[in-house]
Length: 248
Length: 115
Length: 78
Image 1 (tube, rainbow over the protein chains, first blue to last red):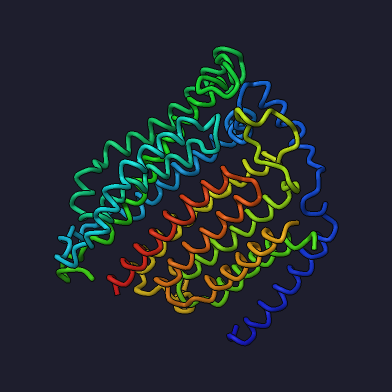
Image 2 (tube, rainbow over the protein chains, first blue to last red):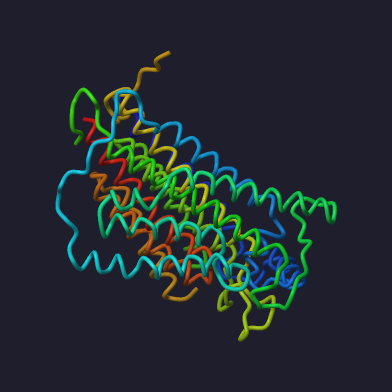
């Protein structure tokens, strides 16, 4: 198929899909309306379980099985990237070239932000059931906070602070803890991922039953998984072909 | 004017598709796919929005009420963002492997299906 | 619909077009990061702080970093 024919097909397809979408949008409830039946069912259920963050309640309590599937997708994808980007026999690590050192202001910024970001990430994970946030957001924030060491310093420093086996086990431990809490729900009440712990006082840190524990499990899993994932891409950049000598 | 948010969501979806179709670089196509997926976030959140309603999080200053934005579509969008970032990572790893095996990431040159 | 939401929706659409029509992948990573920031702003205006947090960590920090690393690796293999 020549390029000109491809353009016509693309144009026709875009116009057709756009028309169908527009017809659908004209029949939807208007933007900003007050008719939301799912909300009217979800908010009372979350309040009844003592969870102040209703989105966290929907994610971990009312639709916990979907979050388990999401964690499985994340886990499987990190596993797949590990397999795809494994160093081959022809490749060996090359030393980071003695290129430009980071600016003094970048180093100061990085070293100041590192403890702040780590603490903020931990706070977001721990308070996921009372304030906006949760396991996933805090976990990825912890993973990217660790890489400030690379931005403010050298790759060697990041490598020393990032023992890969620890984080690989951490990811598996997080997913296993989530599943274990699900089976504990079966043991106590007979339903997978049931909220079997006491609901506590609304809005305090000890509330919402199993939701804070699930948040911590997801935070550990996603944080470790994020570090492993980024680590694979970094390792690839610092690999060289043995025959060719140095890389890029 | 009340369909403008939905139209923007649909336009982002189609923009991403056009970007994938006209790209000469697999990594560029992966980024355009990411744009396409973000159109669905806008659509989901626009469906759940209510004028003047606060976020579905209650604290010491806001008593529980049902006059909030829909939390179910926000949970859906959270899962959507996670899956999108994961798929992007996987596709980027695949394009690195394609460059190693075939020496090119130009979609026009990657036409042969080799067994 | 408030004027602010309409303006940010338009900005998001324009930035999306900008990302799609940027040819160089290195520049695309930066515009993708800016796009993520505008989406975060839109999500905050739509009263969705959880989703905004998720978007800012995933779409503004992690994905552009991976795109840049991939570009660097592919350029090194050429």
